[in-house]
Image (tube, rainbow, N blue to C red; front, side, top):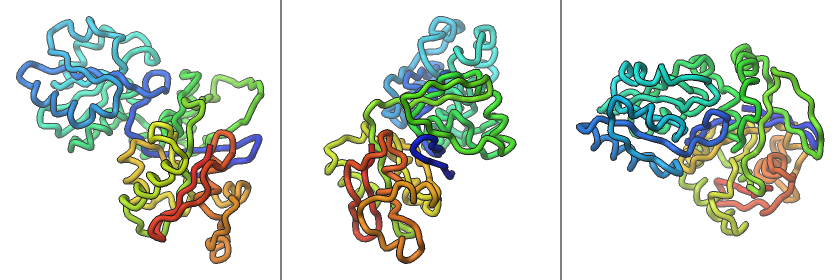
Length: 327
């Protein structure tokens, strides 16, 4: 994913995340696994496997009115049952796509994870989480079927939420037609007047930080994690303070980087050479001399940070990974 940024009118887009956006684009933190008594062992395995990705994950024993009794209490129901049962029991409860909880079903063998409703509002990402336990996520929403990133996923990668949910009908159609372009960033204070086909994203954190990172080709996941841990120690911050990871487009497919970000549940955004040139950092970089790119770690940390400020200058780990911290 590429981005377009400047001080007044920046753009950012991203990928990868482990937590799910709920019905208004925020992080879905409250999950209920609905299971028959004979499937409780599998339900407990799911809690053990992905429970640390949510604020609350609970197991409800199935009975005919269980969905109705708990409707509105959770961001997403995970039905450990046949899809037909979940469909029949939840269909009469559905009212509005922006307010209804998401529904995802999974079989007892954890072979398939199938979002039924609320794919863009939690079910797809819960299915992605279940994929880490071996289930195949069966996505049927248009953007996922076309292997494109809808605006809800872009918001999630940026640790942001969608302010005006109704607008995503138009903007996700534009994603499918390759007409949306990057997410534009507007630094305030400003007043903005938008139409029904403009999706507004707002960052979740007030003082979060961004890890800007670069690497040699083939750097391993463990090297990225070690570098990032060191940078957080220097910044005197915790993993919970990190909004996302930023890098340059020439590094956006680095397998080790993506694996490390996924392990920490972080989105990854990539910035173009032009983006980075506008926010070049203070530390000299050989990449500018050799290939004409500014130092990726500092420039991406500054460009993607909320205040375009560098909190920790470039650190190098094993001559393989560089990292800087922006805010």
